[in-house]
Image 1 (tube, each protein chain N blue to C red):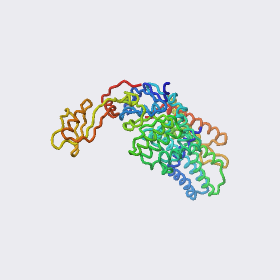
Image 2: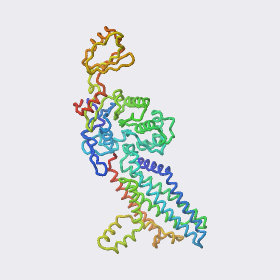
Image 3: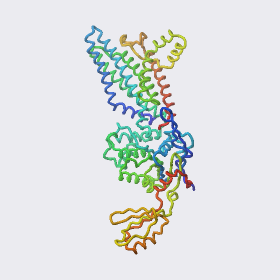
Image 4: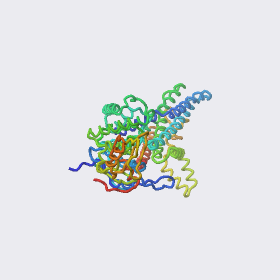
Length: 261
Length: 316
């Protein structure tokens, strides 16, 4: 475990010393703060706008950061040949991948938390109190990026950052629209319908993690009409972490067989 | 009692498939050798001979298609064996965003050291490789030679029994090369086994106990230098000042003659009667400045086998 944590710590250090991340973070903060200004133009809907725009900003930028970090993680180690120095150390290949993943997850947790704090402050300035519902939504967004970054990491075990980025973004877009996607398949029927059905089973249902700020109440956050209580948060978290574990296991399987030429 | 082998390779072969059309490139065809405990072993070969690929197979970075290898008596990739091993890759690349201290701490933690032990070992090694002036400097600001030294330091963090260095002298100036040579010799004195690949032959002649020569993916020789290199005279270099009046005695055809000012340097063949020539020359009024008998050098051995591509019998 010491070695996994050493890799995780180094991965975290690499991420926080990357200036591009700060730019993305800055954009997210700017978006959240912009909601304050926009709220001035709405009548009694300022809070709703801040929640909506804030959660949307956290969602969008955390996914971008997750893909950016994930697709580069293993590929960079191979491209920059740092892996030649690390793998001959007394560490198994699976520990290396696990350490990279853990470092990514920790970095993303910090990023989402930082954006969450900015959103909460923005809500406070508009007179809102502490909103557990918003925190639930932020937690779901965090689990969402864990899934996305795990997928990006798996792609980076065998593909270039560009292709990994395209694939990861593609899976994110389709995964977010899974219900619509399935409905289209059902309507199409036949082979296409069956194929879509199977794809729906394999691809992550990221729709589950996307909270709609429009119906954030004092106690609940809703995902497209479905009330988000603690049971929902727990089951969705288990789904997200389980899916991530499978994808990371796939990344390990690919990484274990690779020649580092 | 037979010496203990700490590193063995038997019939290693590796073919890569490269490019869009997956063209086959046979990087290593048949490499075999063994390294004994406590020796300095040189792994020689021209560029592209398959040295680095062989080392990558021994370090578990590349899987061989054929053959077997063991490190410290265990299979390649075994974590326990890796705990007792230190490795410097060719042209080392490190995490540029880390300072030297951070990187060595990281290497120490990966080697299984506790934080205090890693810090203590780090401080010792920074001094040992002469980088005390750049402890907190980011690695991206290090020169090639400095990176090579950090690479050696990270390889030694776990206080390994076996140190494997891929081209450790590359990128170093003559002083740096001497320091690395001295370091390798000092590691041997501490009881460690050092295996290093190189194509810088004078370094090998100076410090290696045994060598293996690999050409075009095959081991063509293995053994102690004293047994590989012929002890017989291959030539004599004579430096003299010819007589002011008169001629030098006749020389066999094809003798290299280098004129420098009033002096002449002659490279006489091994079977030539140098004594008789010198007597005649002195009698004719020549002044002999130096006579240097020449035995077979590693360079000549290396060049002969690389060019001929022939396979002399390996010396056990």
